[in-house]
Image (cartoon, rainbow, N blue to C red; front, side, top):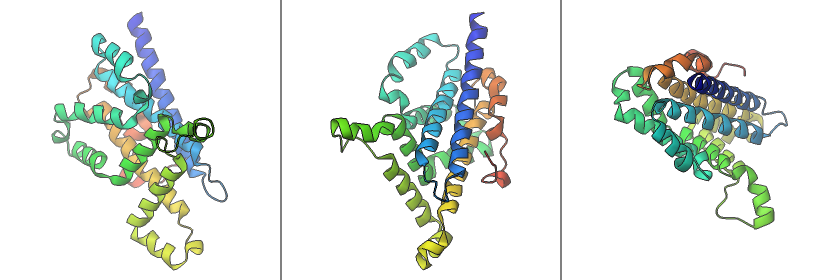
Amino acid sequence: MNEIRRKLCLLNEIETSVKFIKMGLGDMQKIGDGNDFYEGSILSLSFGLEKLLKCLIVIKYWNNPTELKKLHSNAWTGKKGHNLELLLEEIIDLCEKANYSSKFPAAKVDIDFIHGNEDLKNLISVLSDFAQGGRFYNLDIIMLGFTDEKINPSDGWQKIEASILYNRSDLKEKFVKDPIAANVGPEIVKEIICILERFLRSISRLFTLADFGDLAKQVSPKIFDFLFLKDEDIGRKVY
């Protein structure tokens, strides 16, 4: 009975993570025409991604109670437990130990993307900072006067947008010619969503392609939305 309950909780946690992620992507798609409320999207995405990454790690150690207790009591306590960058590093380390990227062409593409895409790294960094306390940036400044230890989520998001604008020569050219008429905002948001969708597909494929055990494959239908996302559909889904 205890094992059944554990699996039910896992299924619930994965399902919840996907719902938060889709909510975050949906909120992002609504940005524009006077709506610049990024914080709602950042909150949902950071929370959903943390849950999903932790579920994948838990699955890997499912039959190792000692390791699970160590994660729960040490590795995932305090702010470091909300550090998306550390969670992602743990997953990539597990993949490297299993030579995952050498087993399938898609695996190499996924790992190279996670390792090499600078815009993705910036996104994960902003979401990670937010999860670790950045969501209370304004209150911390008001009550404690912190200035150096905290990163303003709005500043982080603007840096991501600026980076994408700089790397997209077509958008950059339009913006330079006429910043107002160019209206590059929607295209930048779409690019951010495309990056996140590629990342989510890469993580989702670990459930079926990586050596994370039979349980990972059994629960993989819960991440169907991203697992079978085709290249031609990236950036076109409405959440």
